[in-house]
Amino acid sequence: MNVLKRCIYGISIISIASMNVQCKGDKKVEETTTEAKATEVVTIEKSAYGTTPKGEKIDSYKLKNQKGMEVDIITYGGIISSLKVPNKAGKSEEVVIGFNSLDQYMKANPYFGALIGRYGNRIAKGKFTLDGKQYSLAINNDPNALHGGPEGFHRVVWTAEEAKGGDSASLKLKYVSKDMEEGYPGNLTVFVTYTLNNDNSLDVLYEATTDKKTVVNLTQHSYFNLSSDFSKPILDHEITIDADKLVPVDATLIPTGELTDVTNTPFDFRKAKAVGAAIGAKDDQLKKGLGYDHCWVLNNQDKGYRFAASAYDAGSGRLLEVYTDQPGIQFYSGNFLDGTLPMRNGGTYAHRTGFCLETQHYPDSPNQKDFPSTILNPGENYKTKTSFKFSVK
Ligand code: GLA
Image (cartoon, rainbow, N blue to C red; front, side, top):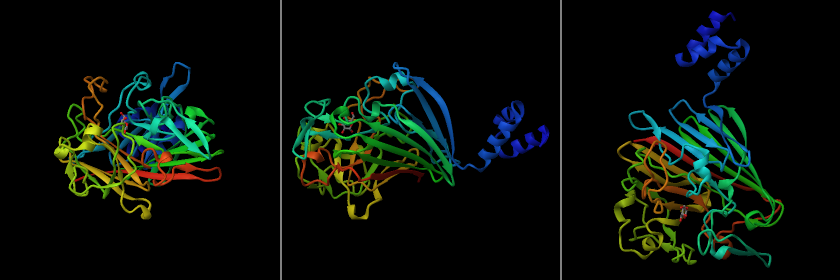
């Protein structure tokens, strides 16, 4: 192909903005890139994000589809640092809380966008026993252990592999958690694959294997604000949770061991209800959680992967539906956000300006004999999938 033809070909399949690049530099390389892009429905672009004080290079991957959805994932903590989806007018805007630098992500923050492990949620007093042996974890949420420990999966560097094809593109992250790292037994090899599809859904596939009996409960800790206006609390968002029961907690947010009926309580989200509708109600559980910070017992556990919860913001028209094969979902209404952490473009994240829908096993399962087991044995495959599906209505 001569230069002119190549340029015309370029114009027909890519935007004018990128045309200059196509017509200027090395010809061979560009042609390949251009042709590859033309057949790719969902693209991935890698860029350097920063360097940790230890000298580890952190990359950022942008997955972008043709329906206006874009997801940025960094190899530090497997963090979703940005997620843009269209509103009802077709305008793509940011819908997750995040920072704009590695430095900020490395400072203390409440798990913004991060992968959580080895055990998401709380373990009472940081202790559990396997085969008669007691294990002790750091107490990082006095008096309990929370979210895998102070140096949990949200603060480690993952390696990344890209995969493209069909109507989707994936980023497969890998991390090997060493035997006794953060107090957990067994070398645990973990893969988390983020897949962006062209129907505006983001799948998160979690896989793990161990060489010693251990406990595993992985989740994703994105804070959503579907209005894209992070100066506004999420109290208007309408939530549904397909759960007849709740996992009630004590004053330290550890399950009491019962599973209680949500009927006639502020925890009944079987029909869509605004977050703010009952969050101020006089209720012992709301008092303990300082709002919603609870695990719901999802219905239809025998069905495996199924609808779990949704959130809708009428102003933007954005609807988020969460599907999972997990038994529970932690709905957290951002009660600890306190206006101290910086927004991307000025201002700070105030009380309840984002909510989390963390699919998982129930908290403290290693110490609760009646809860579904979170034990992983050598030779077993931990494999679970959650999807975040976006649309407008
Ligand atoms: C989880 C917990 C909350 C809180 C947040 C982070 O959702 O359940 O209590 O710790 O993480 O602040």
